[in-house]
Image 1: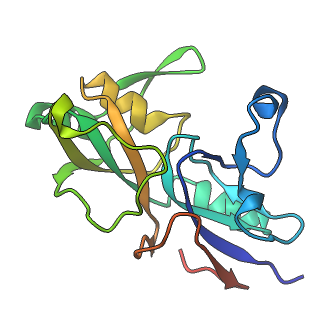
Image 2 (image 1 turned 60 degrees about the vertical axis):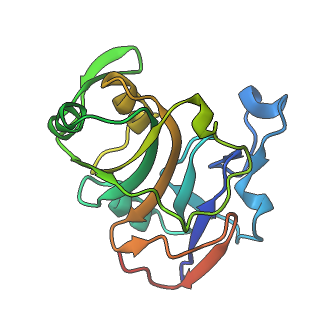
Length: 193
């Protein structure tokens, strides 16, 4: 059986799933299936929460999904944080910080974290971020090999700089390349991560 793979730029406000579960049923959240006519058995590889945007890979192949979710593959995020981030906070992110995962304290693994210039090639977000009248913001690149629930948001909050916008820019070798919000690219039979 030939498998299919897809790359999506998940827009803000979409769930990384195809079916509404009971928790989200009342809100009638937007789902991935509204972006493209995916073949039966397509699944997202990992997730981006409702408020996050960026690269999301989908596949019909469970082995590919397992490989990409492993700690072998880097995932890079650009994060707009509240305030001007300090070198001390960046060092804390790099070394690992304590967050809560499923009600238990967890120390994140060491990662790459550094300040970047504000990206000017991102699609406009469906919901505006507060403007500069509310204080300065900073963009930070954070690259992980793990992915706990809302991990990046918890990490930036733990060092005193809450996340305002989060965009996944890269998964392994696959990079954001001026995609539009909601754009879907089919990879066909093979994907090079």
